[in-house]
Each structure stands twice: as structure tokens, then as C-alpha cells.
Amino acid sequence: MPMRRVKDHSYTILDTSEGRIFIHINHLGEKAKFGNIYISDSTGTRFSLSMKNNVRDIEGQCDFERIPGLNGIFIANIYDEKKVEIAKGAENNQIPFESTFQKRHKAKSIKVFQDLDSYITSIITFDMGGIWNKLNAPTKDSKGKKVTCKDDKCSLHLNSLSKTMYGPVYSVDNSIGLIMATGNVGYYLATRSDEINTYLSRDGGMSWFEVKFISYFEFFINQLFFNKGGQRLSYL
Image (cartoon, rainbow, N blue to C red; front, side, top):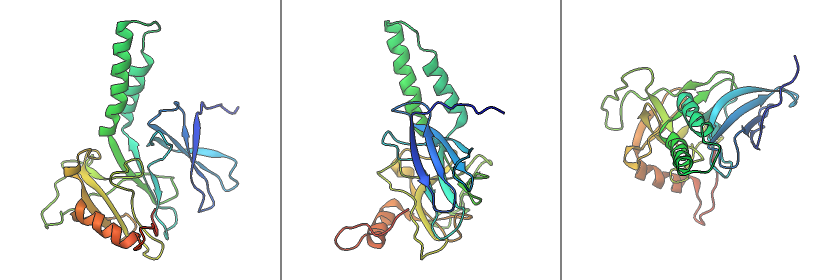
């Protein structure tokens, strides 16, 4: 079968720690909000698609994080595929001549892409990107009250590298399986700070529970991951 050339604009090497290369390719352009992730074979020369619509910022920071100390476990954020297709359609249907209508259409297209931030989902893999699944939502909140998920579309979503106001998922090599992060339970990752909580996993992301609100998390992270001089010690 002949090789097919894929359109590419920029690349981000995500991970090379386990004998494979994870690479994020921006297929759209300079201000793209997402791209696809590919994983190499053991030789690093052949790649296959692992994930579509991986969230990125304009600096090339991608929501893709390795869990240290445990082989093959990664957490990532993606945009809802249906919403991405709608956004692409809005952009591709622009009028090929300059007019007031065209300007309005461009503005609408830009807004559709901006609205994608309301449709971010967190996923996890335990087999080096072979299979990705949603994160299991905790059954109780930090006060012991039952967390209600109406259907299987409801899951746990975590903030990652593209959202600097919350910080990424935190874990360290000498605390195997221990992960701390901020996020929420629902259909998508919340955009309002008052909906964000703090979550902890003790088994490498298989199960999660809510611990405290974000203000406690920020204090804990400052104490745990920064020394007295303000230098960062370790993060994902």
C-alpha cells in the first residue's frame, strides 16, 4: 500500500521514556487548538495513530502526561470529536470573497473554535496508548456525599498543561501510583473555578476520590513540590 502524505504544521515530542516515541502533530496551522498523537514502533521509524483531537495551546504545550514509576500509563485531554467536526465545517464554509457577510462568518467560525474549550474530556491509557478510556469518577465527594453520574458519559476530567491557572497532573517517581490533580466530575472539563475540586488516586489512575477544594491543593503543592527558595522540585 502506498504511503499517504499527511498535512503537518508543527510537531511536539511528548515522551520517549519507554522505548517508543509519542509525538503530537498539529495538522491545522499556527493557532490550532488541537492535533493528533502518534506512537512509534520500537525502531522509532514507523508511526500509528493513538489519539485524535488532543488539546494544545498556541505555544505547543499539549495535554498529555506520563505517570512516572508505572509503565504505559498516560493521561490526556481531547476535544469532543463531534464538536471538532462542527468547528471545522464552520471554518471551511467561509465565503471566498471579502464582504461584510464573510467577516461575520469568520467571527462566527472563530467563536466556534473558542467554544471547544467547553467540550474537553480526560482519558487514560494503561497500555502505552493502545486503548484510551475515560477516567472513573469517584463515588463520593470530600464530605462523604454520593457523587451522582447520570449515565456512562459522565466521568472525571482533569486540568492539564494547557490550563496554566490550575497546573498539570502531579506525581513523582518515589510515590508509585500516587497522583494528585484538579478537575471535576461531569460530561466535560469545567471552565469555572468554582466547579473545580481536588482529586487523588492511589493506584495509578484506576480509581479516584475527591479530597479538598482547590485552595487546599494549591497550598499542598507549594509545600510538596517547591523548596524554600521557590525552585520547583518535581512535576509531571
